[in-house]
Length: 319
Image (cartoon, rainbow, N blue to C red; front, side):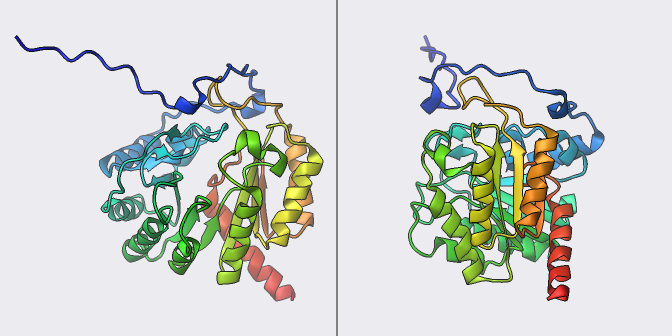
């Protein structure tokens, strides 16, 4: 008689949050609501990603814009697996021990970019503190593979902070020459212990400053969420810190709580407040600013890149 294997309990997506008390999830205001994705373009993008066995941050982080972006054939590829070594209190990506890197993944990403016909592609990843270089070489290989298959495509990377990586990790990614180097600060420094405990604000800021030192022509980009408990003065200070690091492009979006175990939503910031933040950021010298409730790092990234490049040319023409 064959002995039956007992059923396994479902895997916890966020084991580090299991002990946390539930946080009330307030009702979303009308300006946050989006329609469920149903278009043919959405389905075609989904199928191409499935065929190439690719993860996207659109799905893993529960992005509210997935329907709009995928319907236009735009998706943010998430490389190095779907399991993160950190457990930030705002993030819905799985936390745990990642699998080994897939050496064929850069080629599959490049194939999907070519098949989707992307003019601009965003590549991001989970944190891989288990790797000596934090996954920097994997980023570089992915950039090179896309350049080979789709030389006309511009490439934006949204990287981890490489906080625990060996020296040279950042240089490895910059040497692969992405068009935009993005790394998010996520929130004001005073909220790091509760929102982003595995990271360091000034390390992240210095990372972006270092990109510009290595390649002054490379566009740099960073973003924060609001509605986590910050105040206006704190947001304005982050803007000043970013400009001191010569960051070109800032994004500001509303934090949305993925589950009751995640950091609570302190408040929903109004569209008028976002417009005020955008005006303040442009006044501080950013080449490009995106500040709306639904703004995310890669939302409208291709169109924004075109405007970013045009803004630099206009600034150089005035100099």
